[in-house]
Length: 189
Image (cartoon, rainbow, N blue to C red; front, side, top):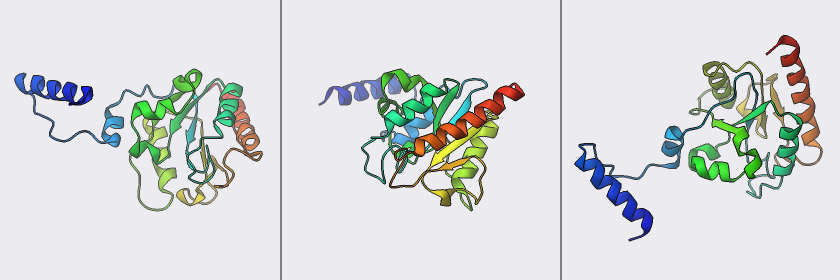
């Protein structure tokens, strides 16, 4: 029996002894994420809703080769927090998602969006619901799939799937965040 299996077995026996129900199936990654302790965006932070595939790497290559470009964005805007809107939030655990990022940036990865929505612009709807539920006033989404948003969504920074944050697209995100951050400061967040 592996160490993890032995620990899980011990926890199940302890839970049963204390009168709690016994877990018969391990939690899925999405269930783990729903109970994980994401801190949520900082008060008055500008939030960057982040997709992975087609943004942090070309297509679905899973290379994360554009993480340095994301770090460049976060370095330029220290008042910006990241909320993961990528479908990866359904299949990867809280810890795994955080470990994708370099240690100095992990505290900027603050949460994941909620359940997927149906209908037109489903990712836009889930982001808007998250922003409303969390009192977020200023945000931008960086995504490669414009079909998940309504046409002319004002806060979508669309990047081509094959390019991600490479090929100068990081400059467009920096410009959009600069405009948004400036507006937030002028209004007093």
